Image (tube, rainbow, N blue to C red; front, side, top):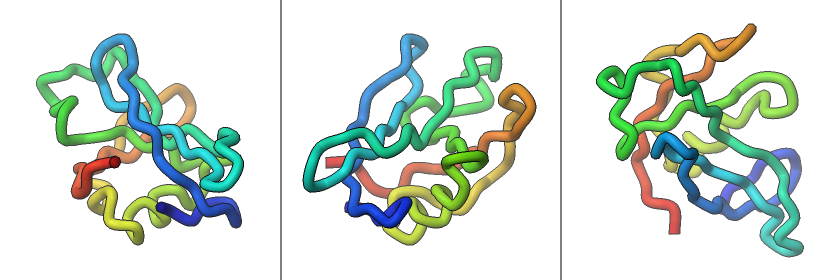
Length: 100
């Protein structure tokens, strides 16, 4: 469980079409979507990102503060770098806990 946007959330793990991890946060009580924590940057080379052990986190706009929330809940490391994602930069984080 993770606290984000004043909501207790669960994380649903999926994959983008290119195999990268996708994490969707859902309200723990209603199951309604709250946020998609990750972002897919297909042009970023897989050789620079281990798709099994790293995630690209969207930490801007409506997702501001999500890196801290995921880190406090021990799902990710602090950012190990940033990747251009349109007009913003996604945080590159190592997965430190399995989503169950």
